[in-house]
Length: 138
Ligand code: THU
Image (cartoon, rainbow, N blue to C red; front, side, top):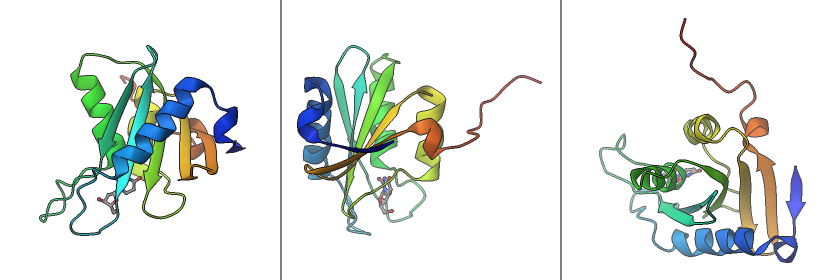
């Protein structure tokens, strides 16, 4: 969808951006050194954060986005409308697995990609995951 200015965002979305940036400091990435923070904005305007956590046998490693979403689910809450992502590389977009999770749980979700506080891109999850899978009984 394009670039947005931090100061043009509403209070809730500004808070979301700040929380994702702060979360990156708490990432646990001893293997890749690639730190990622994510934050999701609930429909009740609460923010939940997540960080990537790396494990040396690799497959248990979890991305920041899924960590944020699954922690939110653990509270019993379900509805969120935006996610912000801040990674070590400028412009860290969600991996394919996280795109599926975001799409399945919040098909109209806004995705903020934070390059810096002065450079934020916003996308819709449907654009990031064209023809996303939805399970239907056959
Ligand atoms: N990672 C995330 O947490 N989110 C992304 O969107 C991309 C990748 C993590 C997984 C791994 O710990 C590290 O970044 C390098 O791939």
